[in-house]
Image (tube, rainbow, N blue to C red):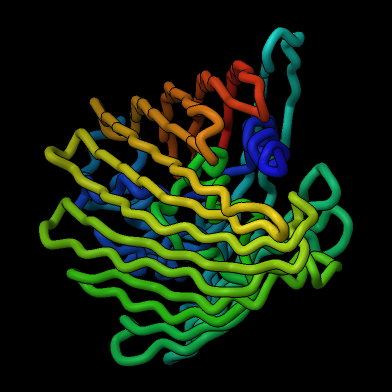
Length: 385
């Protein structure tokens, strides 16, 4: 029963998603590593100049007949309105959503939500690397808050060695684990607490990126943007991914943390998550993603609670910039019963730095001894600059 708040939190989290940008399906273009396009070697956040150009060349629909290899000046920061020096990279994004939800037999509720409104910047001088974001959220109490409704999801500094394949950094960092995707309310992301919305942690991370191997391990010191030290989790998280083929990669993840008072369960808790994940593109129009994680919670004064969270997703791109996405997911915690869900999504990258997306989510979730249906209809508009 102590796990019921966590399961209920997972069920309700779909009501207020605030995803950031990370497209694991770029493997369809032969990109098995993330450091090519992102300052963060594990993906998401500020784009490199190459990443900004590829974002236009490979993501958006093309109407002019212009060669695919040619990117327009709109690929630059703020649609080329501001010219930054080579060592300074600008970024940021705004995402707005219309949402309708229904839980169980309750009424259908609707809302308009500013999911994300962040500005970001990164510095690259010789081997020095640094990145930070600052944004605004409409609610209070976010784990990423620095003051009221002002949030900083990540801020870190480090040093890249060699040709940049090895990076050591410290600060508030996205937790390295599994597939880094924008659907942060999926069971695999919520159960492991490894999304790119607000579950970042402070600590030290070491990453390595090459054509064959992508890996990162992080020593977690806790989230110092929450006040109560007892709620801060400390431990480690990491992954190793091998890409033996141009459009196929498989990896393993591991996470162990301990908090003197779990922020949700209010008792001492040691969390573990160990899993496998894979990305593949049998042909360019289709990208397949999958992840399965075995999770363990060792609560003070209670037996360990074990379970499995899984996800499989197919992303079909019939025309460049148009994505039809189907996702299935399951969650089984302590044998209480299997929660399962399905997502049907469509996204259109219709202009430079602009896209729209619609999602229909249908979940059947076990909360304590009860099962509830959760329906959500979402329409989103997103721009990055």
